[in-house]
Each structure stands twice: as C-alpha cells, then as structure tokens.
Length: 640
Image (cartoon, helix red, strand yellow):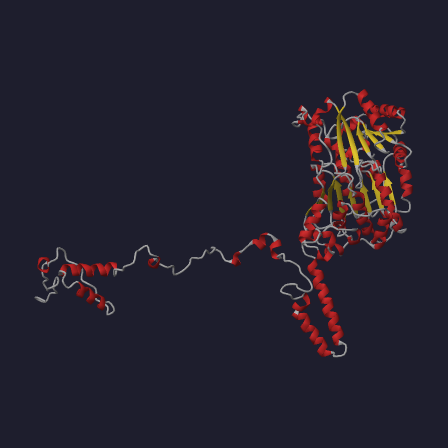
C-alpha cells in the first residue's frame, strides 16, 4: 500500500514463461485430493525421466479428461446406465374425466354376472353380504328360539333378491324384465322397436302391455273382450300421457289405432266425474270428439259404444245428413260424449240445441283434414265456446301430474297426420304445454302394405287388367277401387258388376242413408267390391280389406297415402295396386320416393327410370281442396 491507496493489482511479480520453460501459461492445478495422491505419485515415479513440461501436460490431461483406462469406449462395461426410466403421464388427472357427464351409461359399469358357487374367487353372493349376516346374527342373539329360523329366511330372501336384481343386467331384452328393472337404455330400445318419438317435458314411459297401462280393471276386461290383445304403438305411447291429464298432440300414420288411444283415457277421465242427472243433463256433454267427415264420426261412435255402453255412458253423433230434431231427441236424457263434425256442431250451438257449459275434454281427430276442408273457423268457434273456468295454466304446472290431479282441468288432445301452419296455430292457442307423440315416419305408408305399380295406359286396358286381378281370386273380399271423379265411379261399378262381383259405390252425391248402407253391406260381407272417390280414402275403417286398387292415381301423394291406408290395418297385411299413365307425371317423383322407402315393396324399373320421376314437378296439382271438389268427395259441404 502506497500513499494510503489500495494497490491497483497484485504486487508479486511472476516469472516469465521462458523462465518456466512453457510456450503458454497453464492454468493453476486444482488442489489434489488425498485419494488421488497415490496416482500422481505413481505418475511422477513412472515419468521421472520425462521432462517437466511433459509431466505438467500429463497432469492437465488427467485433470480435464480423467484417468486413462485400458478399456475400449465401445465396451459394454463403459456404457452409461440409465438411473431413471421415464414414464408417460397424461396431462390430466383421473378426477377430471367428464365421460360420465357426457353419457349416463358410464355411471353404471357393465360387469359379468355370476351366481351361486364359484362366483368370483369361489365366493357366493350370500357369503359376500356381510351386512346381511351381521343382521342375521343379531336376530339370533335377540331371540334364541325363533331367531335362527327368521335369520335363515331373511338370508334366503336377500340371496334371491340379489340374484334376481343381478340377472336384470343389460344382457336381457326389455320384454324379459320386470317394470321396476327397466333402465333408461331399455326404454330407448323399446321406443326404437315401436318407432316412437316423444317431445315435451315430464313425459311418462310408454306401456309395454295392457296390464301396465294403469287402466281400471273393469275397463281392461272390456278391452280384452273387444279383441285387443297387444296395444299398438300409438296406444303404448299416448295412453300413459293422457292418463296424467296432459294435453297431447299425436302424429301417427293411418291405421295405427288412434281411436282406442284417445277413447280409453277419455272414459277414465269421465268415470271420475259425477254421473249426469236431471239437473246436469241439460248442461251439455263432458267430452266432445271432432271428426272431419260424417263417416269417420260414425265410425268413432261405433268404436266408442263398445267401451262406453258397458260402463253406462251415452255416446251420440251429430253429423250432417240427419235432421237436427232427430239428433236432439237422441240427447234428451243427456250424453257424456258427443262425436260431431265441426259444421253440424256449430249449427247445434247457434240454434241452442246444445251447450258446452260442463265440457272439459276435447279431442280433434284428423285435425289436418279438418283444416283442408275449410273447418278452421268452425273449430275456433267451438273451442272458444268452451268454459274458461277450467283452463290449464300455461306454466310448468301443466306438466306436473300431481298438480293436475288436484283439480279438474280441461284436457285437449289433437291427432293429425301432418302439422300444417293452421294446425300449429290451433295447437299454440288452445293446448297448454302439450306432449307430442310421433309414431313412424309422417306421411309414409305403414310397413304392412305392399305397394305395386303397373303402367297401364287407357281406360279399356285398365278395365281388362282389373278383371284379371279380380278373377285371379288372389285377394279375398272386401276390395276397394279408387277413382278421381264421380261419373267414373258409377260407370266403373257397372262394369265390375258385369264381371260377376257385387259392387257398391261411395261418393259425394250419395245421401247419408246411401253411404251408411254401402258401408254396412261391405262390412257384413254382402258386397265384394267398393268403388269410391277420395271420400272413402280417409277415416273409413272397413275390416280385413285385402286389396286397394288405384284405378286412377290420386292428384297428390297425401291422398295416395290415405287410400292405400284402407288396407294393412291393425297389424294385418295388405296389397295396393296402382295403375299409372303419362297423365300422372306430376306425382311420379313422390310415388317413387315412397315406394323406395317401403321395406316390403319393389320399385319397378319403369317408374325408377321414368323421366318425370327424376325430380319433383314444378307444376304440381293443388294439394288442398281442389282435388276433393273435383272428385265430389264432400260436395263442398263436408260435415254440414
């Protein structure tokens, strides 16, 4: 330290490189450990005759490169060993698995079911139930005399319960399970089997059999006596919903058993109401059923009387063709159920023949057909004439069966094949939180009808082909032949009569008595062939129709669907033969699509390759009342 200042650098002078004998200055050697000192001593002893520079270089090499070994670097002994083995890990934990939230099936894992001896590891079910055994021992200790017997019975019952519950796994079909063992997956398969689709909140599960329907025993006996063995798809889905006092929209194909689906819940509903007496019989019916045509209304009346008459209820039909005085006389003692066409019912209300003061159950059958016939305004008048005191609240209460059971609310049901805007307007206005049931594919024929198509041009060739079909005796009576116009109906009926077959006609120019007589002769077997316009194409139920012949193709595919729906009803099989010509080009595309979707029908090459069947025609005929007016089906009056 000079003059009180710190030295600027080291004060010790080092010898020069030339003095040390090195070309470059090596780094200072690290301090030697005691364990390496013998090696260094050996190295110095070994290289005592070497120069000092060579010894220093050897020490530097040993310091930075390690001691020299007489082993090859490629030797197995010289390879590095892995201290740890890397394992693949997911970036998420098992607790973060969201698959159970995505699919409820993950919540219950499927396991193999083994019972009795040798279950899993040789242990039976009863041996694994320690809780049951402990409870059995407690019973024995509490009552030494009878406790052992009670404990043995309890263990046996527990064993049977566990085995029975285990056998109801997903390996069993829904038909082999008890109702309490049905899972969500089973109900989904059940709906797929019967082509049932539902929409709405709090919809109950369908019924699998009549025993599970919830109908009273007395009514069930009547159902069995009427010949109902198994419920149809629409009956399975609609009856449980209707029994909960829910409003319902039923969309079902023709011939699906809709009539019984709405009649049976209706009878249960009015069975809980007080019977009509001298004071209440003039306040009107408890229920009204609206139908678009006279024939359909009378058909519903016949079906309703089979169930209602044994229960002591009265059914009366109000349709055109009969005098109002006669129908008023039929209601002199009151009627719980009125089946009517919209026009005649409005006429009776306006004439004060009928009031709806206590009506609380409304059914609209074939609502879309009523709209097509121009009955939207009469339907609105009828629904507006109903009392408002028993209207359901438009809230979640309308979906709660317990809340509905506490009060007698109005119940509205609508059955239709399609949902045009006018029908949707009525549903939105008058139905409260309805449940929607769809059976099959809307607008398609049932799978029990085999559709055949033949290109037969000209009326004479068609008559000749029709004679061949009738004389082949392949199809048993009754047979229905459809035409488009009234004048062709009578002419063709005379020709079929000459072929040797008893024939009747049905069209809009017939009186009501003539219509009823024609249908009665066909039903009781007196007549073999019915020649009709589209009047009989919808809503007419003639049992055991084996064949439908479209002598003239309908103007639209909707009318065709309802024509062929007269056969293949109630689960039975039927055949529909259609004669086509070039004049039917407008409907060929839709006909091709419908036949192509049928499982039992074959699409002929002539129709498949026809030019008009490749795309839908832009100039399609009127789908509404134009075709009906031309055919004379209702004479522009319908049910009036």
